[in-house]
Image (cartoon, rainbow, N blue to C red):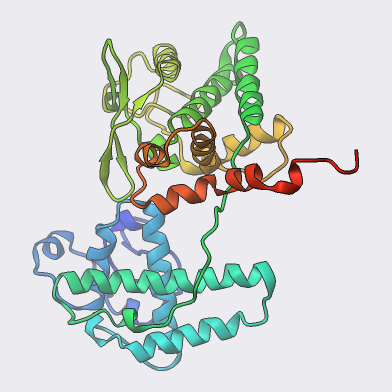
Length: 365
């Protein structure tokens, strides 16, 4: 059972247009069985039919990961209603009581958890409610409903914390030195091992020095790199489909130029900058999963045991800039955060380490 909408939302076979593969899902989202006619759907006036609103809502989201998350949470809500023999077909039929019952159900299911695990569960409940609330906000702005009933809920209070570990300056040096040394040692041999380490050095060097999101790196195209005698700028489409064009360091510009000159000489301007090392002259661009594996594997080989991810590179730049005296407002602009509180989360751990009085003296020495 699954909703019939444009196939770009998922990885199922194009002829089915299923948002989620398999035969599981809410009865509500399984109403449409006829083949999907995109042209008719795109030209028709938006109605308050749940499938229609959900389709337009997902189309308004740029990130595939965000789409999947919002779809999954919405399906969870509708499957809960189905289990109570409540079948919602129009967004205007969603009530405060339905959401309250779902919230109570989610909290009860995970009531056995304590400590840090309980905080994770509370965060999950808050996220699920937020997903449905975003869908209702979308409908409210288009005058399909009179109010967002999710605004009336008493949602879990979740303390926001950084979910990633930043690298220290020494760890950054270790990681980049490892990549550069491996690349240089394999240069004479060439082949895939050399291309792989050259790619890792270019990717990690860019992530550390620009602070871009991993999806921005994967989507970066050759034509997005603006080079002038004075500076080099990267034109990116940031989270929320907003344009973001930071000027990058001259060393980073040189790193990208070297990578492009060696591996992407014949690629057109609309080709992706970073592609798979197996065949760097094709359009097989890097995926977010590939970049994640790249960061974690290189960190492990460099002897770094803490949990890291591509997002750690972003947090690292914020931390290093903060420790270097750069105003937090400037860091916010570089990372393209809407809220300065988001930037503060990135550097919170660095501030805690600096201010921790117990680390100032070794009473055992």
